[in-house]
Length: 100
Picture 1: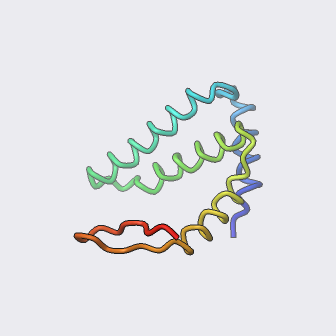
Picture 2: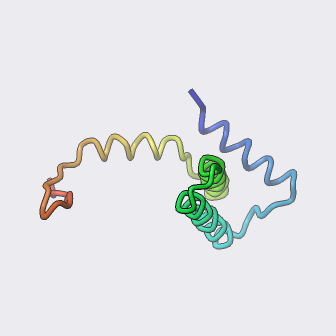
């Protein structure tokens, strides 16, 4: 199993060593969005690099999380639990969240 906390630190360390953006949060969100667009484009065009593009998205998310001081592993774990406890009702073929 991969330790996202370690990966998050490694991604940020690589950004620092290579001289990439370390403090412009707005720019980092834009780069992350751009990588997601590249992944979708690869999928849509049936290219064989979809996995690599999704890895880029994950790397940007890890770097952005480190820049913001967010423990992404903990946030993902908490969100999975929260999602598992949510109740949904299918209305016209669409799952709609039901309030507790």
